[in-house]
Length: 142
Image (tube, rainbow, N blue to C red; front, side, top):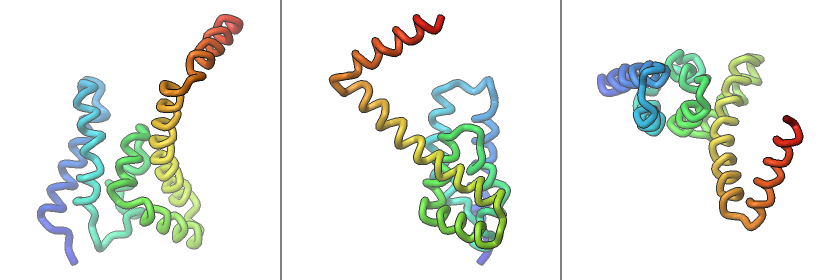
């Protein structure tokens, strides 16, 4: 099975979006849009003939310096597929690739856990005490 024309087009779009995301002149609201779009474009740009850890475009997404891009890439491929690929790479003693894939999985966990932390912080009864403690610690440290 070959990569379809639509899949090839999605890969081109994904590359353009990543370049725009990395451009320092891109406005923040466009970076948010790009981050939200990555999952769809990753899903559509997978080549069924290539193991995704050997796909430089997809590995570029999964090892991106922005954790939100990594997380959306994992979501586009599928968390379970990435986990299985990690285990395959470990069994083949491809430690660096396995570590990169585990990093990508941790990025999706960071996104979920940071949302839970922010929710806990802002919606809990102890948030004002916690904030006061942080302010005191900063004051003492300076």
